[in-house]
Length: 283
Image 1 (cartoon, rainbow, N blue to C red):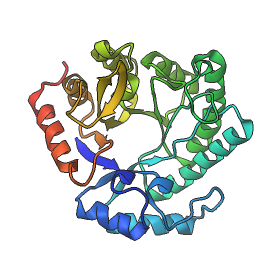
Image 2: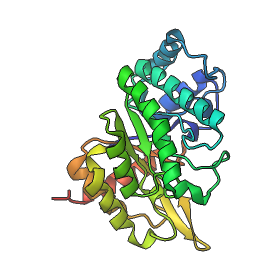
Image 3: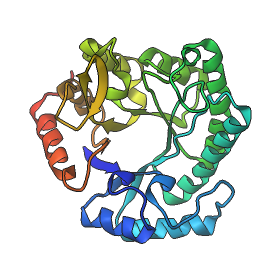
């Protein structure tokens, strides 16, 4: 596997030059880069894009041997406030233009909730919300196809694409080779299904394993009856089950460790690699 981490886990927002130095110092070659979460001294406001600015960012990344596995643009494509939804779509399309010049593998997003503040609300799980997601994503994907850029879509148990079945339906409906899946297996686990987590991940690979292009990895714990995120190796997630699928079908896939840090990134990598090396690929 090719290990990396989220850029903003290296100290949050900082000047671009400091960000580059910190990534290089820690010998990290693959990052998920969310401009507004990682870079403090450049303005990525919607409408500020121009090719010269994108090439400036690319030059800094290239000089420090940093590859953007995911350009993070985590919008809410099902925002019920129409003006905000439209702004989110425009922002994502602008990120597609950055990605084309940066050489990022994809621009990534989750699929949102039907609430302007991303609160968990019942309407998120309805057909109406799903159709709103399709409306947003069809516009985004049309732009991605014209630009030759990949859109990475991430399912989450409390978002519009809340299960492997919903992701499969979405991939069929959107029907584009420019859409791939960012798989965060822990994000598909909740209080109802955590005891059957292996079945959930098995369904992912049964339904759309061929479309999984990047892995987000963390752990989870059950605290007071609720699923909470945990550091790698400090919870209940079954890495062996995930890795048996990856080892046979996704050689050298990029694995981005979430909620890591300078202090623990390389030990997290060693822990995961040891498990990966110990298991056999699925036949």
